[in-house]
Image (cartoon, rainbow, N blue to C red; front, side, top):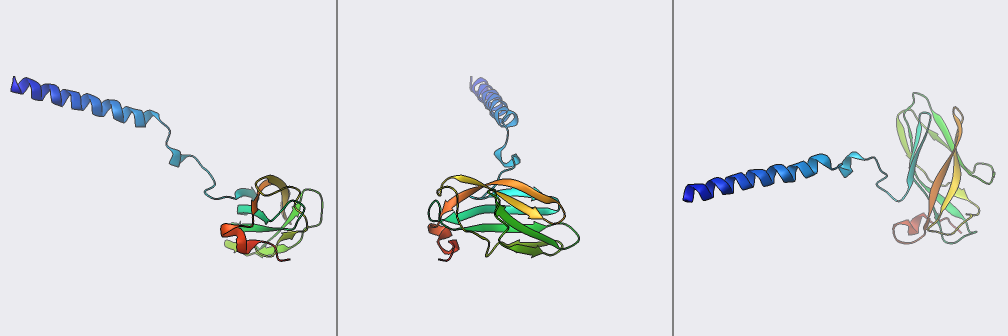
Length: 152
């Protein structure tokens, strides 16, 4: 009787182990899916990647400051600029050396078209590859973004 109980217990444990491990085998793992682990968005144009792009603004119609980083994976210097979709000229050009990462600073937009919590379109522009439209979130100038707000 005791041996039968042990045998049934061992068989039940083996069956449960197989059944439960099959659940994880058939389920996709979240860590295998690419995503942006930040508030901002990523974009690529040629050898240039922009990471964690977001516009910090206090209100619709007010100034906005672009935040994020630019990565150059190419062998030469890349000149990167950003412009609003509405067609205003690029505000600042950032030189990014070969195999370098540069934090975006001093790139401002005179007027953001929508309120914080929404998304707007901007162009990433490089001399080599032209321009690409990117949808970028507008974040409120609060919390971690307070010091990144455009200077008045």
